[in-house]
Image 1 (cartoon, rainbow, N blue to C red):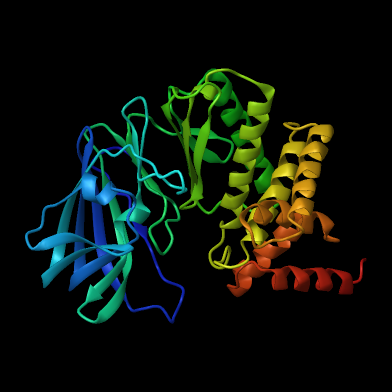
Image 2 (cartoon, helix red, strand yellow; image 1 turned 120 degrees about the vertical axis):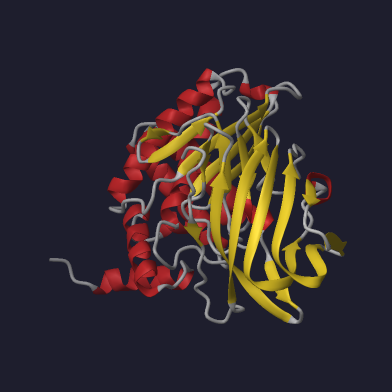
Length: 391
C-alpha cells in the first residue's frame, strides 16, 4: 500500500469476561529514515497504558514521549505510560533499535538491507487504566509511510495487536497464496528455498485442508547481517498476526548446504501450517496445550514437504524418526518446550486419523463452535469418526 492510503485493522475481543473495550485509534507514521511516530487517540480519557514487561532497553532507549505530562515508568517487571491527569491523546516518537533479546521470539524492529523496516506492533499496546478501572484497547490501526513507500499491516493482528508493520521500498511478490518480501541481501540459495517452499506449501495447504485464506498474509524475511562466528546462523520470528515474519542473521547463511536448505524448508512449512491453523473466523489456537498446534504443525509440515516433493520419502522418514527419538528421550512429556514439538508430533502420528483430515475436521469444529484446539476436541473427533459408519 502506497503512502497516503490508510489500512485499517479492527481488533475485537471475543472474551465476554474481559474488561470493557475502549476504542483506540493508533496511527503509526514513518517520519524520517529511521524514526516513526505513534499517535494514539482514545475515545475516552485514560490515565495510563500498562505495556507489560520491558523489552530490554527498547522503550527506554528508542522511545521519546511527546505528550506533556505523560512519562514512561518502569516498575518491577512492568513498563507503563502514565500521567497524573487523564489524557485522550498521546504521541510517542520511536527511533531505530537493533538490539534483540535472544530469549524472545520477536524483535522490536527488524532492519532490511534496502532501507525497509518491520516494527512489532505488540509492543505498542497494552491495558488501559482510567484511575482504578481497567479497559481493553479496541484498536483501529493506520499506517502512513514516507512518500512513495509501501506499508503493509497484519491481516489478523489479534486482541493484542500482534504482528509486524512493514515500511519500505519493496512491494510484496505473490508466491503461491501469500505475499512475500525477501531482503535483497538474502543469499541466492536462501531466496530459492524460500520462494520454492512458500509457493508449493501454501498451495498444498489450501488444497489439502480445503480452506482458502481469509486474507492474503505477508511473509517478510529480513536479513539483518551476514557476519559473526563462522557457520553461525540465527533465525527468529515465525507466524504472527496472520502472517509470518523472519529475522535471519549470521555468517553461516553465506554458503549453501543441503542441510541448511532442509532446515529452512521445514521451518517455512511449519510456520505456514500455523497460518492455516489460525485461518478461522473464531476459535483456533488457545493459550493452553501448545503441543496441539506445535506438534500438529510438525505433522502437517511433513505431509506438505513429502507431498510436494521438497522432501523425499526417505528424508521425511528420517525427520520423523528424529522427532520420535527426541520424544522418547523426553519420556513423552508434552509440557516441556521441545515436547510441544517432538511429543506433540508423536501423538498426531499415532492417531487413527491422518494429520491432514484430522486438522481439516479440527478447523471445521473450532470455527463452528468457537472452541480452541485441544486434546478433548481431538478425542471427540476421533470417537465420532469411529462411530460414523462408512458408506
